[in-house]
Length: 109
Image 1: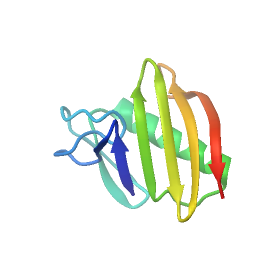
Image 2: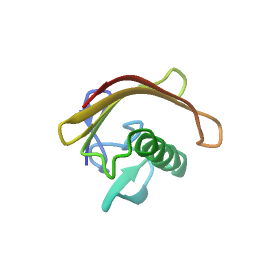
Image 3: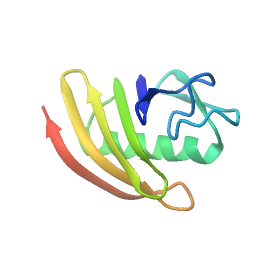
């Protein structure tokens, strides 16, 4: 899965956390068969919860590309791609890494 966070490729220790782009920390999670880097366990949980919510909303079995813009306080505007299909959405998390807001902005089949 290709991941871009605030304009920069992410998901490895060198490139930054798959959710927030930070390079500190050292948490790794297996996500869709890939070992992704996260700065902390909270970002990892938020990312996985967001991915599960996205798959539930779309019925997709995987995500090929995920572009994330924003931060914890303002929320994140995202675009996900699966093959030729794409979905733009807004997501915000609560204190326990749960998805508190998930709003579809546009969909392209």
